[in-house]
Image (cartoon, rainbow, N blue to C red; front, side, top):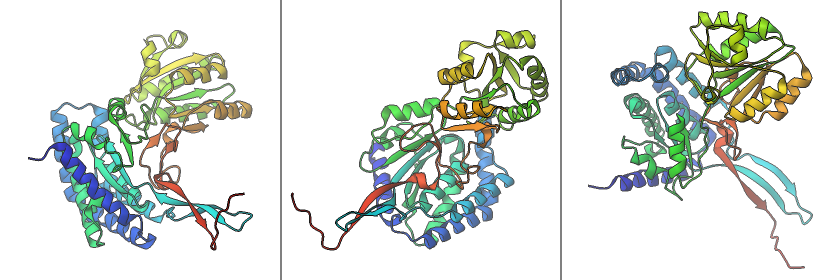
Length: 421
């Protein structure tokens, strides 16, 4: 029997062959392929839901938490939305082949840069089956082959989606290895996959901090990552309190299990006596547990006292840490110390403070008078995202089509030769 390492390498080599084909696809064929995937998802809704129901049954039996179940669950509306996202990606401008910065040198030589696919991209993720389609669609549109390694809890749902994608690839006479779903649940499969220098060009892990740190530990290929989504909103003075409550409530309660949900609220001390009781009423209606600093506890007696670890925690649950700060300087310092460089926002009526916050908060997305929940590829007009990067190279924030390409120099001459001076 062949070793797991040999099997993973074999699958990756097939993906590499497919990447050489995808690199040259014309936009019209890519678009037809995505249309076929979108139609196939809708057509196979029943089969996908049946597979998802079986995955959910196993997850519940294994006593997975509410946040995990929320990420895993699908319904007819969410499947329709996944199909529509594929159409959104299809409508996006194809970045491949775009020539940038073409300039003419004094000797007449023309030098520019062309957008090209990265090659083979591996996406390692946990309980979000929509990632299967989003990642495959983005990679195919950008001319990349992708190797998917989803969590075992979503294996049946992921396979149902990949069956649809493979049928569309066959219909368009393209290799099914353009989109490969690793069939092995053994965690060592990930270790082998991320070591394939020269075959896999990039790895994008999506999931909990433990998964991402493990991938980074074993990887020998570039990894684009974000470890945590410890997102903050700072309520400044002065600020529209009605706006502040609406935005902060949305940032925390619109969905708990996502990386762009607010986990810590910072409140300027000059408005804390008025703002916090009103905000707390809203949190009680949503069943959110407040863990506050000592000053917050004096205003909201009976709440839990926040610990040092609470300021660092991505709760992914109806729990919120709250701290009263003296001014914007303390708010920025707190975010710099405890934040994860993901998404942080300010609610303010002071334009100077808004500009300071934008410049000084070193996060991949910075919001002014808007919910952190907008930190999303679809909301940014990217069609969809393959992940959110808190790295600084080669991209930050939600990653769309253009972020799945790189550049190469193209040089056009007319018999030019270089001579030594």
